[in-house]
Length: 395
Image 1 (tube, rainbow, N blue to C red):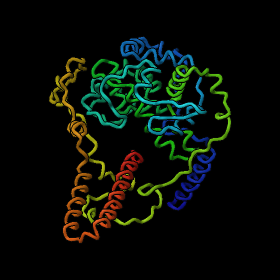
Image 2 (tube, rainbow, N blue to C red):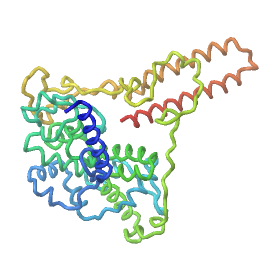
Image 3 (tube, helix red, strand yellow):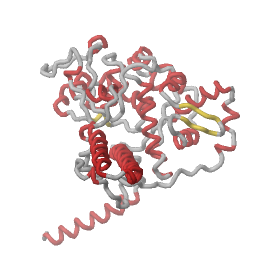
């Protein structure tokens, strides 16, 4: 058979494959259809005695029990996330507060422990006690769930169902291992704070998406309904009376997708102040994270007492072994009131420039200089907000 005939047959197979692919129903993602709603039955949880014991010991079993007594109201969750601003939500004339404390009151999960954001990295040395020995040398920060030891697979899936709610159950991330450390009593984690920050992050993204995108990103339905139900009982408002109000039947279209400066779409050109000309290279293209590289800190084994990075076999630690863990330098800087380095340099340069110009300017131009500097400071604040938004978008 000639090369030409082989190529022609290959082209025919490619075209037929393309037609077949177009006719296939769309899957929910790499791992299939995403189920981002918490379970409303305890059947799966009670089938794993080890998970029941861990959830009860860490005061999360009550949360699962309360979820089993509700039916998800998707429109309530959508409107709650759509109107969530500054920890406040107003629905049908009722004001709700959303905070770690409010989550603790509604779910019974204690508001104590180490605050751990979802996107924070965890050193791979902490993965090893939960991973099969044959896969230890093939680990990355994201790995297939089949790499886990058999005794941890069921409880990991339950953690994904009840707490992280990504809707995917085939991949394990750093936040999953961090929660496993919590439930196996290695290092206590603040689950209420995690649920709060994850919902806040989801709301920020949700409010910028189109309705079609919102259907795939909405999660924590049961958590939101528990918070709403608990605060309705505090206000003395019956659930049936609240959910039957006209507010939940009238259309509430989400905001149109607006790409601000620094977003992924076409952006207007803006002038850059002179004192920012020497700033580090900033790019908002997908895949380039020069601006945010310094913000990602990896928790190293030396920060936790009782862990040796040179040992070939890592042990699961007990809580008393990590009481002396040192806080990261970034956390200390925030506690001491320090600002990020780039912002400090910009402020100092603007201050020095202002002093120099003020000394050379006549008194009649004093207020004009103040006005110009206020405009430049406003531009700096807008660029900082855009950088923060871009960080969220890239993640």
